Image (cartoon, rainbow, N blue to C red; front, top):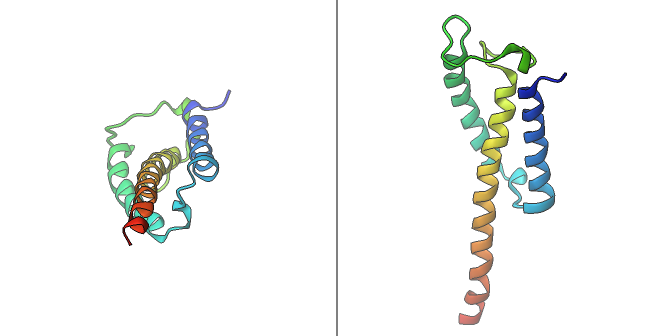
Length: 114
């Protein structure tokens, strides 16, 4: 049987990428701002997640049967990074899509006024 946390993380990553590329099409993967935001969030995720999951005195416990068991860096389960990617990408994707929609609504009104 496949580890549940690993499977759900992979499903989340694939689903979010597919939704962005084929449904929402906000264009975030082509924006430097997206990748910079991901790098900033990743750096803080490493600090916080490393503290929460340290094996010497964990605050958050994981069932080892539900994950791959790969922990890097420090004691962070590798699945946490995939989950973080999916969660942050979803938020940024929706935010950018709403911004794009608002911009498209304004454009026709601006042309009429000219």
